[in-house]
Length: 82
Image (tube, rainbow, N blue to C red; front, side, top):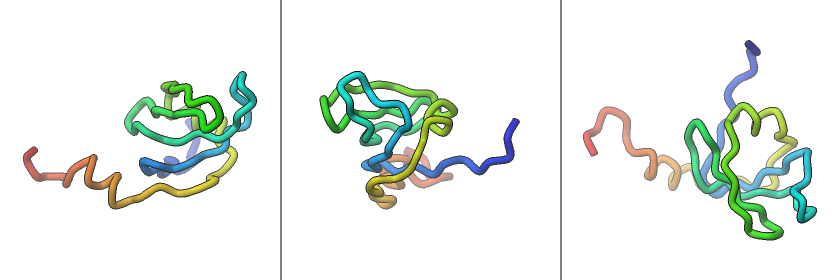
């Protein structure tokens, strides 16, 4: 087990991964958060689900940051009934 902190992701983040997609794209937009992260290729618009651990291994950097307010609104307020 590593001691690395968990990578903080927001909806709308654009991340660059080390391994290119078969279409040649390396930039992905985050559109789902959870144990599996939903990513959409910025080149061909293909949608994939990637385990958080796999994403953190392949992660090279942020191209653009998403909106933390939008992410908090979607997750909801802790302790508040939905």
